[in-house]
Length: 516
Image (tube, rainbow, N blue to C red):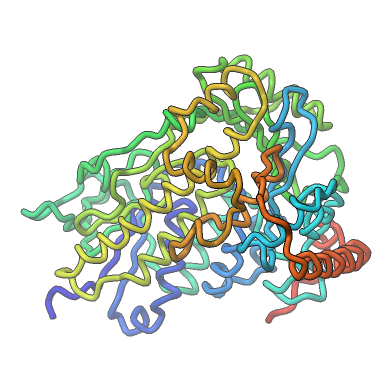
């Protein structure tokens, strides 16, 4: 079979490139060992990592585990810490008061809306996340999701990671090359060569060599060298929906080596956007995502420094990077024999850390749908495009939801509530949710990016209240009351036994976690 797919060339490194390489290589170890498949990653030695994708979803733990990565080594080499959700501070009012959590808890019966129905009908004064998720209080106390006696990837609560993106890329590179058989080429791409039907045949490198491949994966970042520039797939902007187009990013040192490490990503609302605050063992990653149409870079920088100082950080000699971006994605992600992953596929502001999970899901689907022969490439491409057009659309809906719920009154926030900026599907769901609680039937696609639980945490963390018209069924009331009692017992137990993030990380550095 002369047209069998035997060689995959990934152009571009960074987190997207190396996660893709790792997922593919760990899926086909026998084929790589038997030289039936080669995976080559070519990256420029001169392009630095963007370095702001420092938060992951819980999916990353299973991804790393599937690659054969030691979680202990990952923590040590990537300056990683535990993430158990996101905290949204001051999103509801101009005073910046109040907060709510979107925890990573995978709550039983939250998908069918039973918990939310109980909470709404009983007019529970306690915050929605606090009433049903143990992670609300765990995050409040900066606790870890596990103890040193728990094996790698085992835990008491669901967790993702905070990490140093630059160190993570280097860590994955070493693992992929040394353990998974990925070939690594350091070179600039001078030219992309195509066949008569415009498929990519090879990339010409500045060292005079050519890299030939059957399938090319574009991980070249914002420039999208293969899919965008060479194959001409257009970029679809959603700046009319998500207004943020600039980020100011910096790194803030702790005041001392024992400072608490936050167990969640903190997102604090500002007049023209929001500030992220990510706790790593050695520093905080802090940045302001804002709309340049609603404020200036100078004012944004002043707001960022004011936030840092208000949270105990020092702003003397801080280096601030400005990152300009356009929110949106390619009109299609797989064209001919090229598929884009990461920034080359699209970019959305990092509000719910969707960037890395879209990389993971993209690489997983490429592995699952990897065409055996070139003549079925088009079928795989169509399936991939259908799935990821849907996923990107749902990510845009979910991010926009956060803004539409706010009662802040500055022009940025008011413009976000303008009906013309809200996607039609989200408008329909919001109308539906006036009297009906979000449940699994609202999100029926396989591998839904954000489940009903996530929507409930955001809706009811804000002032939005669904008004179910019918009385609560007695069996629901009794069942949920029992679950709440169980939850409170578990919460009490975990609060008294779990170590802090910093204490556990110190023990991991010293002893390591036991292997599964």
